Image (cartoon, rainbow, N blue to C red; front, side, top):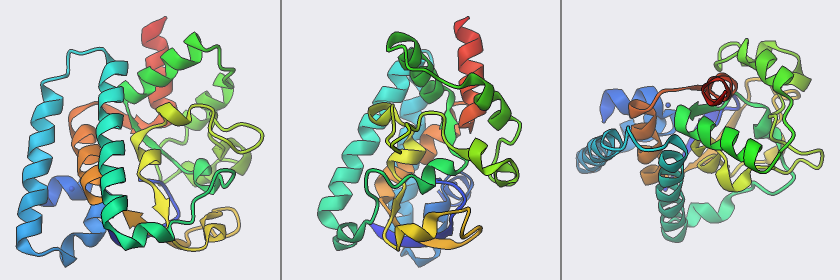
Length: 227
């Protein structure tokens, strides 16, 4: 729906104050919005906060699946309406963004832990524990680059949990040269992102309602609760 240039640091921080906390993409384009659009975004954000709050007692994996369905539907809608979407350069096998700090809700982590157990997906829990010590975009890049690699990434750079990946991954799109997303070669470099605004609002509302944090930390918490 719009373009925003962000650092290659994490897919991922809106209503004026709330949106700026949970949707960097929306925060970046907020100053360019007219008042009517800002009011619409604020009302939408409030609506989904109420909706998600009413679902707090539902099974966490079900909550995550519901949010993912809403996010995916809005992304498809925005892609049909915005010519910029045709410039998206993300392709299967390009996994630079899979080395970034990813924020996730507890329900999303619970869904992934359940999937790992049900489908017997091998997971390097030792690396998850190491990653959890560097949780957050401010320190994520200070760990060895090999450890920054997502634990769900296969040897051929495909996501092993693609259908159930966190919302942060679902709505992360780049329209600039994908090579510029390589944080090892271009640390701190800014890439041009396509922002599906309505999907961004839904994700921000979910992050405002449900417990959230860096994916490794949330995975450990979900794994502990399942034991």
